[in-house]
Image (tube, rainbow, N blue to C red; front, side, top):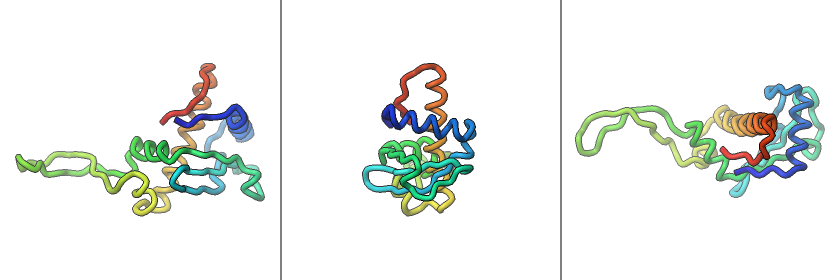
Length: 141
């Protein structure tokens, strides 16, 4: 679960409002993945910043990022497997690699971008939908 502080929630709202509620205007200026967090620096594409210090920094726990990769099926594909005992084929999801290992070693740069953008979109969607209903936001994926 990604806990949003009041300050971070307010900053995200300002970013959403400044982008006229258009998610496609919110860009990831830079990113970093370490053992603990996926760190994203966000900005409005119509108002690019000169430094990362001016961007909104979002720290997402690596476990939550891994869960999103799994939920979206980024690290797997639909394929056929042979049943080990009964020797018949069946369709199943075939995992390419473990979640974060897939992101770091197997994913193309485009797939990595899709995964990072999916996190941002899910977070912003959840924030807008729940704030509209008056629910206190603690984002889970």
